[in-house]
Length: 412
Image 1 (spheres, rainbow, N blue to C red):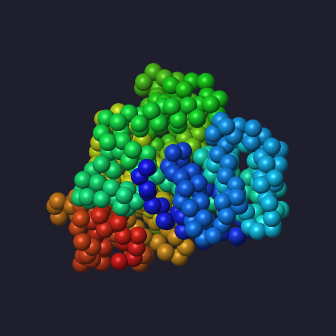
Image 2: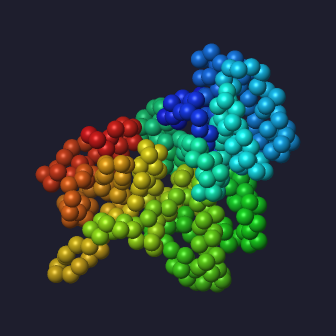
Image 3: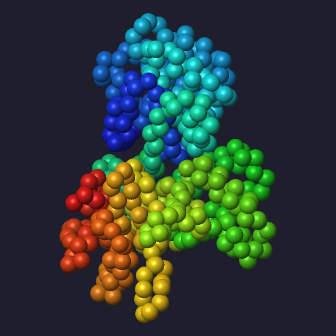
């Protein structure tokens, strides 16, 4: 089996040990949460002297453990495994498959020598109600499919070849088990149909699954485009499908809950306020996006934008889409800044530009940045391996390679 190092997430788990919180490892299904917990973190525990019988592991998505989806059975089983006063470590995969898991996890918080780690693939189990149930003692660690840096460190070779593959097939860890492109295509298409789509239909009792499937096709073809429920309803109407805006809003929530897509809100930079609609939607994994539309639309410009968005999320930033009014030829014109990126007191304005082949194209990308009325850092990320440099306007221009492979690239 190919060993994939996920030190970024492993170090978070290590740093959060024994903090009195339930460590909740969340993320899209098959992105490597179980591997992180049951292989990498378990190996860390053993290497630091924890006895194997002090590690209690339950995979609730395994049929052999079906009886432990019952909360009483789970609680009694875990208690029976606590053999002495030393620290024990409880690792539960897919905890949302247990009925009333909130009560069970709260019960575990009362066991002084039990450190609890759980994984889950549905954002609903991280809702406000659940956080309230945990009495503020839930500690989320969000896991994504492999970032390009993780993918490249495992694959090696020429970075541009690795980028081309990543841009096509994405970062699902299991892809390394397949040798041919045909096998990878089949895996991703089956993953979408047999795992994500069926899971959303079953969890939400959806009667007309073809409508949900069609909605995802539209989003797949509009990565980085502005969408809202009414606009999508009009699109359905043009296809002679009757689907109301409220139903589409509900379906979008289902897709967000499954972690399959992410939503970026629009932010009025000068007005310093959010614009509720329309919004942009990006895929958590571009390989799944490509699989949904049978790898037909491979616009590297949009895929690059999606991957930059994902990378910023992985690094812990809050990512919005910027909106700005500027004066042009005597008229007010609305322009966009691809990403307004925040983390604490830090803010960056980022444009994604696959190429800057002409002076006109460069000016087009720079114009919104130069009209922003503050002094936060302005950055243009271009395709390829261009070395970072500041231009005469103080804008940092860097290649995609530097941005993706250097975790501190925004602070150059």
